[in-house]
Image (cartoon, rainbow, N blue to C red; front, side, top):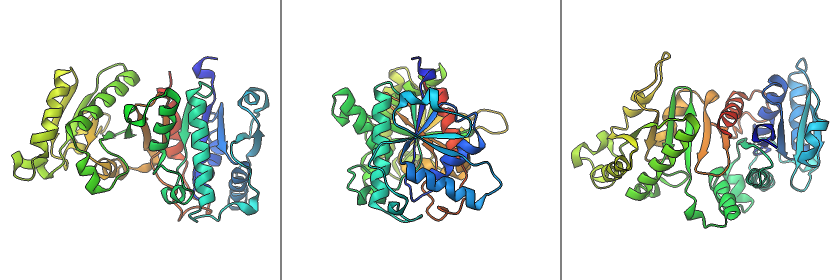
Length: 352
């Protein structure tokens, strides 16, 4: 089957958060965009989200949960108004589901099971791509899941599939919206450890992965702007030597390999320079940020409703909304599915 005809897998996320709700809203409000999609997770959790929206928005169309035993059933079973849900872990009753907004080992395990199943299905060529609804890191830890988030879990699944150790399959997180793209040198580690992760090899590896991913996605080499680690990009060594000793050598090596790189540049202005605005492109196609919050704050400030998280370096397409589980909104019916829909659109653009 051609990749474009394969279903797209959507993992349900943390069932105590807004993941199930935004998935149901996407099927309900944007049926054309949800064509050939299947929810991977738990039938009872998705039914609870359907029932929630029926109570708080009784005038809206009602989606029907369609339990699916295997992917081969999708073409013949899907009808208008159906939301196919593939049960991939031990089925729960409604009474066994954790309360909305509650950190739960049950929710953490369900979320992890869905991600692992979808990842291996993508790696086997059974689904075209994986779009992940948000999970909660504390719930994962409560369940004993040995990964802090999606990125590390997917990396481990891919390494196992390829028969390599995790260190031989480096990946990077890219956060993108219509105005700005940023790729992170390090992901879910403490700030102290993130600074230690700024090495010549890690910066150079980030540049290589970003170059290859953007070249494959757009057909042209990206212009990458590199943020400094220190204020004013170190001010010639007056405010730290990481730029002189680490980042500049990595940039020089990347240029020697033919990559289009500028920097390091002051981190308080590079994102403004890279921002596309009023229909005009920014100075850079993507910004390489030295750590998690340096890169994510500017993207999220511009609006999480169009933000998409893309994992670069995997042998599968994975995207997700640029927001978390929003426990404060869970169970209210007020969650916005816009970022999930943007993640689906991006996944369709990236798949071969």
